[in-house]
Image 1 (tube, one colour):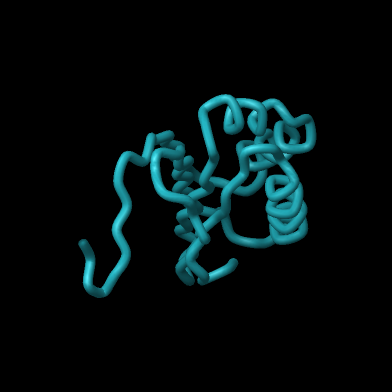
Image 2: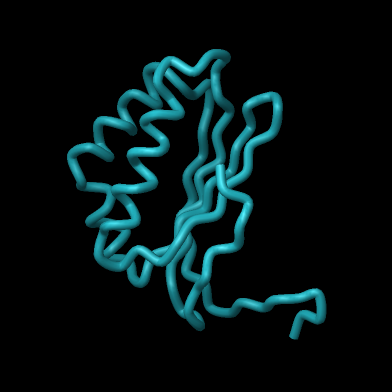
Length: 112
C-alpha cells in the first residue's frame, strides 16, 4: 500500500473511508487490490487514495472523489462489485465504510 499523501484540490470533495480487519492469508487479495486501485484511478471524478495497514491486518483506505455522483458510479462498476463480494466472503473479518464530505483541509506541520 502506498504511504504517500494524495494530491487533492481545495475542498469540497468526498472521502470514502474503508476500515477493515483482514483474515489471515492472501487468497488473491493483493492482486485484486492492485487491480481495483488501477481501475479506480481511471474513473471520472477520482482524486486519489491514501492507505495504511498494520502487521495484524487492520487497514484503513481513504479514497477521494470529486462529487457524490462520482463515488456512486464507482460503486456500480462491475469489477468493483465483484471485489466487494470477494471481500465479504473471503478477505475481511469485519469492515466499516464511511462516506464524508470534506469541507475544510489543512496541511502541516504548520497547520492553518
